[in-house]
Length: 365
Image (cartoon, rainbow, N blue to C red; front, side):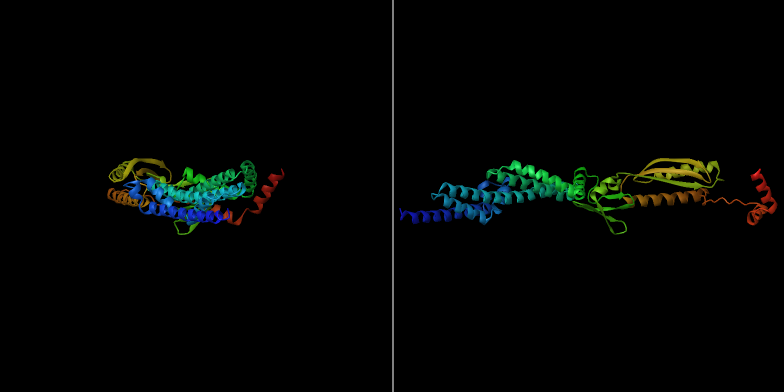
């Protein structure tokens, strides 16, 4: 019996070394000759197999080899129980490594496919990664505890009570966090959009977990908390497909009716000939201190530079057309009322003594 003891340990050592070499050889085989054994061309599942082999750690391979070697020996039930639990924990750690890297690849592949048509993917990747990681490791942790014989219902209940306490203590931060999630899911704006929030305007640079950063037209960076941003009124100019333009021209009151009609026809003809423009209307709108002509048209693009170029060209042509037809534009008008000299003198010197006495008598009576 005593002679058999060393032989059993030698056999366990041999099994351990052989198991390690077999696992190592299998890893090398999968990572270098996958095309020969799985087929050509490689598909997505081939890549997953290769990736899993590449991310298998030497610690796990050595632990698996030692486990197989130790199982060849006869142990007491207690030692065998703890041996199984130890290897289970190591295996779950390796599963967490595989799951983490596969999750990262899946998220990046999902974002890369959608980023060309949906720019929200660029801003949502951080939130997606955070939620996916928390969900993954929570499930693996609870699964591990459950298989180790620990009752997880009490832990879940404790986490629920603790979560309520943490939520109350971090109410402001969690509010910004859930606001970030709302921005990601509802997408009122994405990175690259030009937005106006109250009196601030600029292009969205980054949507973070707590704040959103906007680059203003004057160059500085404006930082909003996500909860404050969603509580405000947001005007998203990137979602604009067409731009409606309204402007008013003022003619002098002495302008003849025929020239007013000519001015309306001239503006209409000029706008109708412009490309990328949809004419809507021109109206003689109001008579006040001047004669007001209101013009409305649409620029068939959201490009601000194109809008300004067209507006400039239209105004140039209208000014030249008015000059050619002898139509004048009104100057800014001010009304000045001239008072008689005696009123000015009385207002300067004030009431006479007799007027003051008569006023006092009328009040007393």
